[in-house]
Length: 342
Image (tube, rainbow, N blue to C red; front, side, top):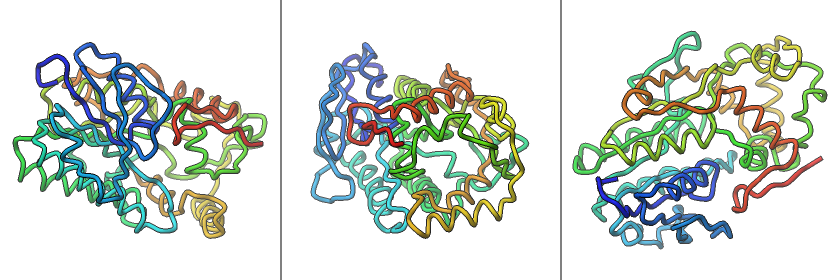
C-alpha cells in the first residue's frame, strides 16, 4: 500500500456482500492505519480502525474528492442490483455514481483505484475452456447488470489514458457467496418472500438441467483477500477470480443428492419471464440469458502475479451459502440483515 505503514483506505459499498469481507480483511492488516467505509446507511458493526460515512453515490450532493482526500487507495464496490424493472435507476447509481468516484479519485490525487468489475462484463464465451483477461468485455447488452459493468470497463479505459499516474486494478470475480450474504441474495434474486427452506435437498424433487448453465463461484472472503493483495502490491489491470470446479447441474446434483432433469432453455426462460413480468421474481430473464452465455475464467494471472489462491472450493462455497439460506443468515449491516421466510 504505497510501501508505507498506516495507509488510509476508502471503501465504497462497504456494508454489502463484498464490502463487509473487504473491510474485515483490511482491518486485520497491520499496515493499514485506517479504513473509511462509505454506505448509504451507517451500520452498528464496528471493525478495528474503521470509520463510517453516509454517502449515496446516486446523489451529487457529496463532494467525493473531499472524502477521498489523503487516501492511499479507493476500493470501489458500491452497486445497486434493483429495481430491475427500471434500469435508469440502477444506471444513475452504478454508472454515473462510479464515474463520479473515478473523477473524484483523480481530483483528490489518490494513487490507487481498485474497481469491482465482474465476470458479467465479459462478452459471450466458451463453456468448455477458460478465457483469460484479454477476452472482450462488451457484456450482454439486454441485461442491465452486464451492460453497466461493460460500460464501466470502457470508462476505465478512458480514465487510465487520461490519468496514467493512477494505478488502476479491475477485479473480475465469479458469482460471490458467503453464509452472511444468503438473506440479501435471496431478496435480490429470488424475492423477499421466497422461503429459504426450499433450498433443502429434500424439497427438490429434481434439479433443472438447463443447457448452457455452467458457471463459476467464489467465496466472498477469498475475493476480499485478492483485493488486499492487489492493494499491497504494484499490479495493474484486470484479474479473474474464481474457485474450482465450475458449477453445473451434475455437480449440484451430486452435492444435493438430487436427480438432474433436462429442461429446455426456452421453457426455463418463459417461466422466469412470466414471474418477472408479474413482479414475483426480481431477477430478470435478460440476466438469465447473460448467465447462459458467460465464459469460464482462467485465473492464472491472479495466482502468479498476486500470489492468490482461493481457500474454498466451489462446492464448499455453495454448501455454506445454502446453509445460510435455510437459516436466514445475515450480518449486522442494512444490506445483509438476516430474515428467515417460510
